[in-house]
Image (cartoon, rainbow, N blue to C red; front, side, top):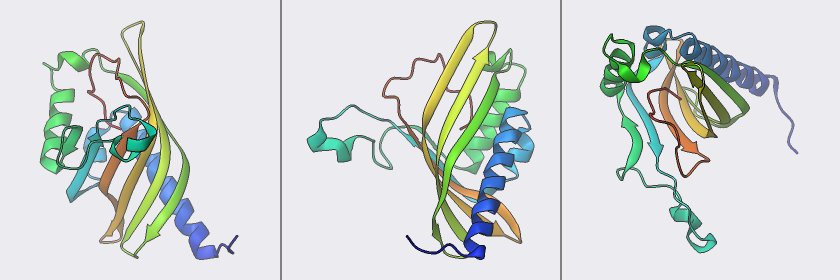
Length: 173
């Protein structure tokens, strides 16, 4: 096992705090502040997961450019937030109550301005009095330093589920 430097520990802490703060913004429905954390060229992508044989495990997730639950840029995310918070958003009226949990945060790559972070997540959502949804998986995020501020440049979301039982996917991961 290699020796961990103070710089690596500080970077790990900085990434964790960014991800925890971002999760809080989503749970508190502070979507405009969340959008301000995104880069102009953000890529937000969640492929479809299929059950495959062990011989074809490399085909378990759809490839970039193929079918996906989400394949969005900043404009699409802004439109989705506007729809979620609008007065005619039947899928979010009443609004969802969410709790984003992130764990096992690890820095995968650090090029200075861009840090690739892998993590596990659990997104819990409840609506009405008895509707509950739970999504569990892993993410690969690219966090970029822009003018001294951390911003999310890429989010790839890999669900553990192959079948989504919720009535909609009107939340943000």
